[in-house]
Image (cartoon, rainbow, N blue to C red; front, side, top):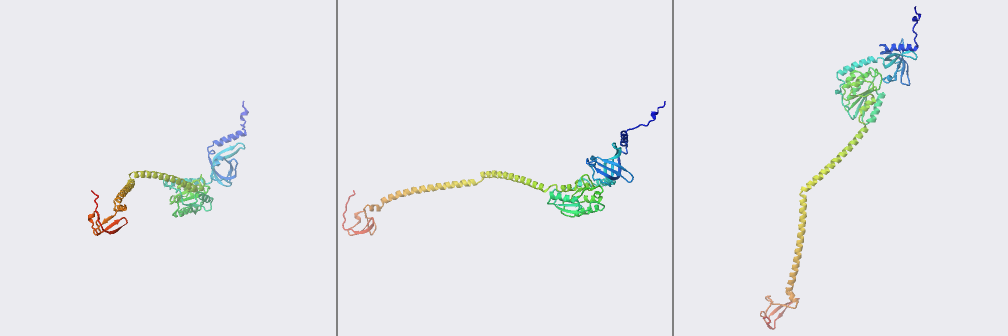
Length: 413
């Protein structure tokens, strides 16, 4: 018998339907890896960090969700009316049955074509060797004159100037103002670079601008500008955009900085405080070295002086002089003793002479009689005659007499 129940349609729950649709969407090879171009509307950033918006064109629209983890890597701020290209997969929100696009990447519309052109130019210049490390110039450790190529009205310039003033106030800064966006920007940048290269005492060039979309930074992906950077007489630091932005100028430059402020910091690796600290430490080490050398030299001098003193004739001269003094002293003592001895001998001889002196005899009352004619002393009676004059010398004088009578006595046997 025929069973009419077999003709009844299968009835699904809403949940089962949504699950079936999700399986269809998530397993479709096209829908699970798709790029879609459209204009943002109804844009909302939730407090959780997730992004919710509608992507539309003239004829249709689709709901989109971008989770916080994917949104964190965006290099621009999405806004209503902005034309973008998004990548992701289609899915369904079961609670409302709403089909929506789960976005993992987002970029301004047209960036894909620009990125392809960027890669093509990068490969061309890389093949020519413009990116080779062998051509990278050494940055000065303590630049005295820094040139800046940037917009004269941009915030990036003020950030760089404040950084240099704080870290290296002794450096002279010269700005070569340039357009940093638009079709005229590459030529303006090249002119600024060439102008700075004509300054003889320039040590370093900063090429920088603030962040922006790939279109905003596109002037830094210029082949002529790349050659101008490569041929620069002085080293070039690029600081274009944000940390995630890369341009051809970054690859050609001698050093790439993630931001303009970072470029100024790289241009002044040694700050004034660092320099003062280094000078203080070097001065301390120098003083220690000088003290050590002086101590070593002093000890060496003392040893040499001691050795020289041992072989020097000076000590022998001093010894000879001392010996001479001793000999003179001995001679003086000997002379003094001799003189004293002779004086005593003279005194004794004088005493003896005095004792034998006629004057001594006269002092005892005697007299000396002599012939006034001949001067001979009269010792015997026979030497005189009566009536003849005689000279008589006594102690205190001499007088003359005449012999009246002679009486001879012979008392000597």
